[in-house]
Length: 488
Image (cartoon, rainbow, N blue to C red; front, side, top):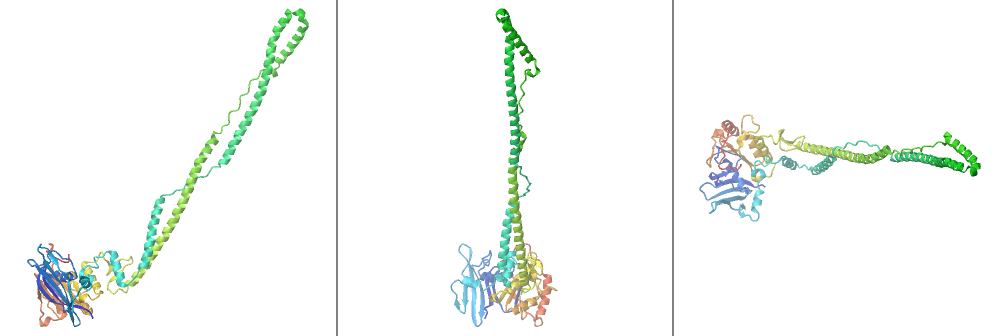
C-alpha cells in the first residue's frame, strides 16, 4: 500500500498568507498572472523535502511561516511539516522537519527519510534536462537497465592506448632515411700499401744507381788527380833527365795511356740521377678519411631505419587499437539501439552516435516545452513520490492548445493510470471550472479561489474547451525578474 499526499497547507510563504489545498483529483491546475504565488505552491513541496531557503521566502511583515503536507496510507494518517522563522538578527531560518506517521513523531535522520519520499523531479523539474550529455546517457542506461560497463572499459582501454601511441608516434617526427653505402677501407689500405711499396722499390733502384755513379766518379777523380801531377813529374824528370831518362819513356807511355783513357766517352764525368718523387697517397688518404665519415652516416642511416620500423609498428598497433575502439563503440551502439527500442518513455531513444534523442531531436536542441514534457514522462517512471507530480509554467506546454499532442485530458488519463495527482501552474486567465477530475484554481496575490463548475460544465471536454480559449489569451511573462521565484 502506498503513502499518498492528501492536503497541502501553506502559511506565510512568499506572497501566500494562508492556503489549504486538498489533493483529491488527478489534476490540480493553478492559473493567474505573474508574481501571484503559483510557483510558490510547488516550491512549498520542495521546501518540505529540505529545499534551501530563498530570498523573500517569508511573507513580508511576518515572523514565522509553515508548510505541511498531510498524508494517508490506508487508515493511517501522517504529515510532513517544516516551519521557518525570523530571528532577532533579521535572518530567516528553518526549523528541522517534523515527520509524523500515524500519530508517532519520527526520530533519527528525519530529513533523509523525508527526502526519500520524493523523486528528484519533484525537487527539480529540470532534473533530467539540466544533466550533461554524459549524465543523460548514463541516466537512460540505468533506466533501461543496460550495462555497458565492460564495453565502456574496453573502449577506454583502447582509446587510452591509442592516445599513448599517437604521442609516441609524434615524438618520432619525420624520418627520411637516406641510404649510405660503406666504403671498403681494407681495399683502400691495400692499394695504399702497394703504391708505397712501388715507390720504395723505385727509390732503392735510384739509390743503387747513384752508388755506382759515386764509385765511378771517385775513380775518375783519382785518375784526374794523378793526371794533373804527371806534367810536374815530367818537368822534374826532365831536370833530372840524366838520372831519370829511363823513367821518362815509361812515364810518357803512362801519360799517353791515361790521356787516352780519359778521352774515352765512356770515362767522361757523369751527373748523379735525381731520386724518384715521394709516394703520393693524398687521394687515398682523403678517401680513408671520408670512409670514417661515411661510416658515421651509415650508422645514422641504420638508426633511422630502426626508428622508422618502430614507428611503423606503433602505427600498426594504433590502427588495431582504433579499430578495437570502433568495434567496441559499434557493439555499444547496437546494445543501446536495441535497448532504446524497448524504452517505456515514448519518443526517448539513443541515436546512431550514442546521443540521447527525444522525438528525433538532440537534448541540446529540444524546446522548453519538450523538456518539460520529457521530464514529466520520466517522472512517471519513478516510485510513487507520495502520489504527486509537479509541473511549473505549464503554459509553455501549450495546455489544450488546438492540435497539441498532449491536451489536458491526456494528463488526466496519465494521472489516473498512475494513481497520482499532477499539480500544474500556468500564466494567464481562463473561464475554466473545476470538474470531477480537474481542480481549477485562480491564484491572486497569494490567495486561492477555486473555479466552481456549473452543472453543464462538469466534464473534462468542457474544461478543455475553456482552457483552449484561455491558452490563446496567454501573454508572455514580463521582462522584469520577479521578487521571489523559487524555480530560478
